[in-house]
Image (cartoon, rainbow, N blue to C red; front, side, top):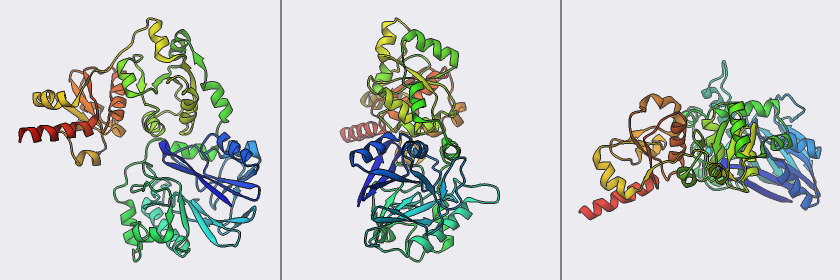
Length: 464
């Protein structure tokens, strides 16, 4: 028996590869099927099953392409309904995989079809639980993604409590929990960075699994403080239910090099979004007017999903040479399948053609603290509210990047604003969106709050 967690940091997502006696199963695969197929081929085994713990909202799964290429069966738990062929398992149904078995445990609450998959080893012993979004390390799944008429998030939280108490808590304490997500995912509110844990330890440290918690207490704890889900969540869940284009067709359309003339022409003809995926520093130095920055070196896909509201939006992009295929792949993971090409040779080609560029002015934290801050200039802090409340510049305006569209009325075209986040990634996204909408007089504070705070402490220490 062989188990491997395939973790993707950008999405804080864990897919799983399980193998026994020449057969393999994949649990909750990412959009691109080739890494799983390659792994199985290298190990000389066939992929027999693709298990899905639920219809994912935070990414588009690769189950359809995997099934098409390998002949594997796509298996969901009870209540799952899709517009393509799936096998809907019964609660408690077991699937043989080489010398081991995988048992379906229906655990509604996160969604109605949510299920965990219990791996029984060659001796029939409970070895590990692939818990999907039912149980995380340190948390449980949010209960507000399947809300519909006549069914509230409190109803779903109650279902989740029943699922955990009746189906999960009776399992052995030495059972390994392999979750669907880790810290950074919006699928829960208190996720740990740890990739796995035992059920026994989670019973001690996970607030939602503690002994003696009543159903009412659980509902209150789990629903309190949930932020609204990113706008792309429901759209991705629908894609996972209805199906999608093959990865080959998306790559064929999107991984296309374009010279400046064709790039500019296609942008105009398709009303395409120009997405700059280089680093924040590179974007600040020179970028195409009207382009939006979301750097590939940060949490790229979730920010694309949060900020680009139309999944059908044609996208042209600029990338660091050699990263073009990665851009198309990572966009497709969250349902953005309409990339139509990239600028060959990047900004060097654009500048060599003599076309206009723009830049973003910046100020270092020392100058900001010693001079700018004392002049009463307006400061926008684009971190999340919780970060802001833990420490911020006096009189700063908190406009979390997630909610930029709701706060456009708070920013004037005449005003000059100094913008920062924690380290510089989100502030550059924020500035680029405003610049694309015609705003000017925006200055990025390099290093973000971490550098500003250090400079404030240094200044205070020097003054003392």
